[in-house]
Image 1 (cartoon, rainbow, N blue to C red):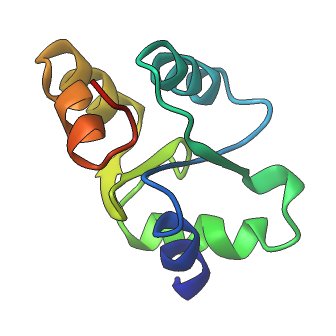
Image 2 (cartoon, rainbow, N blue to C red):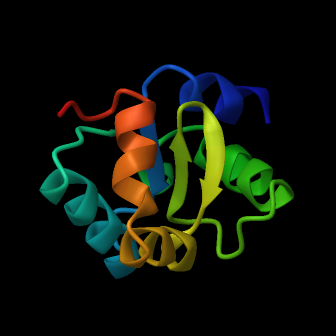
Image 3 (tube, one colour):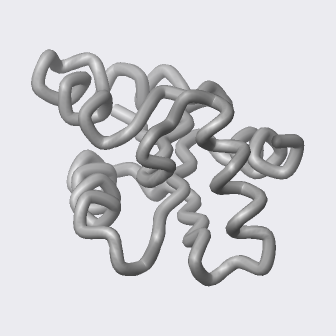
Length: 102
């Protein structure tokens, strides 16, 4: 859990993913399209990936990826991020966290 929290606090936007996950790809693309450059941590390529996956599940992220943190705070998984984007609040969250500038 400490490793996840540490990594999540190092950058304004952080996404925990798996390289073969199509929803992870979609969420990363959405962030790039909004102008953000999130830190990406691919759990299937990280030696601590299984441990971090368990920690993410402990935070309530099920499935464990994609798991999105903005401003060091756990925001949610793909359905949460898509909902925030549709209602217009995702972009403002990224601006407030200084992940994008306008």
